[in-house]
Amino acid sequence: MGFRFLLFLLLCVTSEGVVRGVLGAGGLACNWGTRSTHPLPPKIVVKLLKDNGFSKVKLFEADAGALQALGRSGIQVMVGIPNDLLAPLASSVTVAEKWVSQNVSSYISKNGVDIRYVAVGNEPFLTAYKDTFLQTTFPALQNIQAALIKAGLGRQVKVTIPINADVYQTDSGLPSGGDFRSDIRTLMMSIMKFLSDNNGVLTINIYPFLSLQADPDFPKEYAFFNNTAKPVVDGSISYTNVLDANFDTCIAALEKNGFSHYARRFNQGLVNRILAGQGTPKRSTAPEIYIFALIDEDAKSVLPGNFERHWGMFNYDGSIKYPLDIGSGKSLVPAKGVRYLARQWCVMSPDASTSDPNLAQSVNYACTYADCTSLGYGSSCGMLDAKSNASYAFNMYFQTMDQRKGACNFSGLSVTTNVDPTPTQNGQRSSCRFEIMIDLRKHEPARRSPALPAAGLREQSSYKVMMGLLVLVLVSTLIV
Image (cartoon, rainbow, N blue to C red):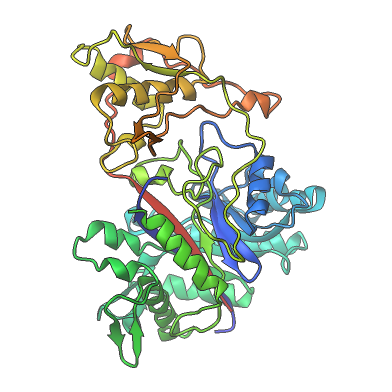
């Protein structure tokens, strides 16, 4: 095929936690998500990207602050369009022209943002969505392409559709058996021809580590790059890792239709592999790789699982989760210039009892409005006793509400303290961090603080912390 395929491989590994990123000939790449209650200021994120060698980034939506900060940064940008915009964009090319004018043209001309791709939708053909976006995705893609051409950006900015790897399958269980799902094969052929005609790219999200998490019999070594797994033999080709196998299953589908801390271990193996310029058995060309993701996002939906808020290589404040050699002996560099709220925490009162009848309701209330996913089984704070568990929940609520007066008031069960409650093990701070949030008032001139929920909602809250926590690593691969 004459056009390029941008392939995202989403790998899911046990640990706690990226904005998605690219690793390749031009440096690292990642995805930058902004669904946080206290996000890092965009200028600090851009500096974080540059300090760590990221030269490409994907935004899931056209976030004004992020795009402005990326102006004249030397970082290439992919701008995403959320699925809820597909219908209006499909309905009228005029709507698409307005979107391109506001979210692409203006940032290129006024801010000097190096926008290279527009990603139309995000996994719109996911089987869980059923037929929700089947009729609107392709027309939206066509209208965005037409709008880019009208704006004089048809050569500079390419279109793509990020689709889930469940668009293809293999009945034989081998990569060579890859083919597109029968229910969307015709649509996929139309989309790929359109991308080919317009020099676009095809983006595919692959989740091989979900197999590792879901199947206790899945060979663990097959998820990494040590070449120690028992090979999967497919004709003359032997596969020793799931990345190559998934990638080549996609290639086969295209050809057939004509056209402990596992996170650190996987990421390091991935970085080494790409820096070495290694391809796959079916495609020897060194791919570009987008790592998902850059920073944790405490306000993302946890509907798919608690792991959604912990994709990052960095914690919410840009601090480093684990060491990673990013080439030439260089290690990750944390965010600089971050300013925090006052050094105080909200904890369960020493005089309060875990048998207090109001405790469970108070914890549920706190976790309804703040991120308590780290308390899940197997997570960094999953080992806390009952009192520390409540303290963690109270503190997350207190910090999320900007330490406002009244935010540490849980039926007389809580108090504020200046002593860091982060637990220690053998004299060392544990990985369970009792956070202090970023002080956005010191970074942004005007920001509305989150409103304290009405007291009457306390009785109605029924939040239950989901069990299990995963860190996800997203890789995207460009095949030329």
